[in-house]
Image (cartoon, rainbow, N blue to C red; front, side, top):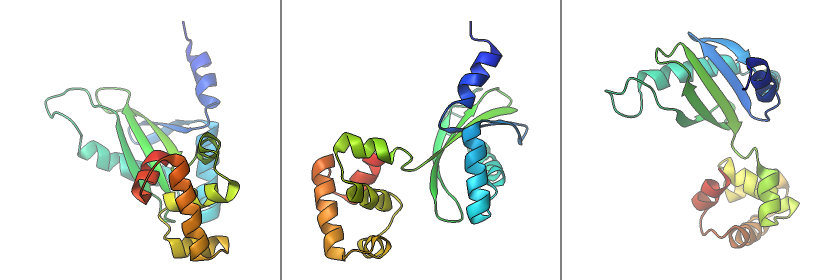
Amino acid sequence: MLTPDVFGAIVDRLAIAVFVFRRGRVVYLNLAAKNLRERLRTSYRIELEVMLRDHLLAVLEHPVGPAESSTRQPVVTLLTATNGEPFYVHVTPLSTADEDIAVSVRGLGAEIDAFRRRYRLSAREAQVAELVLHGYRNTDIAAALGITTATTKKHLTRIFDKVGVDTRSQLQTRLA
């Protein structure tokens, strides 16, 4: 039997940020959530908990699935912070009255190193792939990395070949 203490210890060690809201207030966050909250606050003056609370209100006001269902289904959405950083937000109601809600937050591309290893991308190709994931155009990627647009295109061609995709949107889908 998994006790609450053991379960809490497991969730605390997860690399993904986990928040639990009760009636709109944060009652629990694991270490990854604390680190993400602090990074966004320090680097961008973004209050993650406020952003998530606003997002939860929108998700709960517009449920997905049959209206006659008494239990809400988990919902995964893409949320963009005010600094432009995208996140997947997974909302899972823990009670039928929507009083307790678990929210996990994962940065888009958080697994870029694993993706790099899986497809044997070079360090530079991984950088290019991550910038594509964040919506950068070739000229923006070139400027950000200090390379030419022609070099950016060559990197993208090699990335597409290694990953087995033909377009940026397919690459983004594979990375996500």
